[in-house]
Image 1 (cartoon, rainbow, N blue to C red):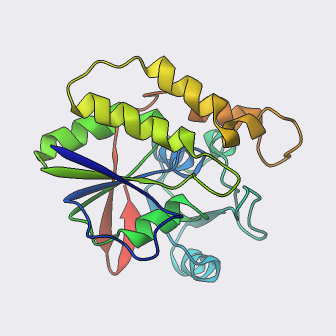
Image 2 (cartoon, rainbow, N blue to C red):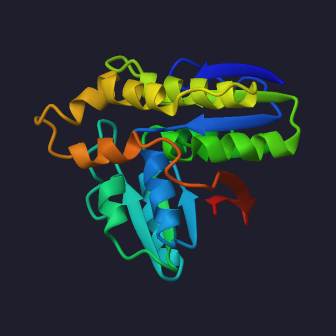
Length: 228
């Protein structure tokens, strides 16, 4: 199995996609998505444009909108911000969610033509590795979404390192990667106390390796991307 990586905010045009693409957003999009699915959400629709996301949420039955702009602030008028701790306490069972975020969702849209596409974060890393292993795929590309001019993105690089090690048949210690999530540039903002929309409770959830036993494959249905 061959491995490659791309950094979402460095590329001008999408490279030729690998057979399997894994888009990683540990802090926080795909931790939020995993929490929502674990709490019974029926489906998650990742939509890049905020206006399009609001329109879709209004068009679908029994649907809630989740969104955040760059830096993590919630989108005005949406039901929830991009907060896994908030979603953990919310009643989303049986509902569909429309998600629009500045990093993870954009990564999925950029690589939507991959033969196999996954959204992932540390909370479902081992399950993602197991799903990929079952595909018997030849090539895996990890998309790092968390690197920005003021952020090292090591929370996502750590997740990629962990999944790749698992796929290579190694037995890595998940605590090492959880520590890197907490110590990343963005991770430290959640404990600084100066960012009201970056609660420490979110970081604690995002740094819990293998909290869930499911992967999050992304499919296309009626022209929309959907995570189930």
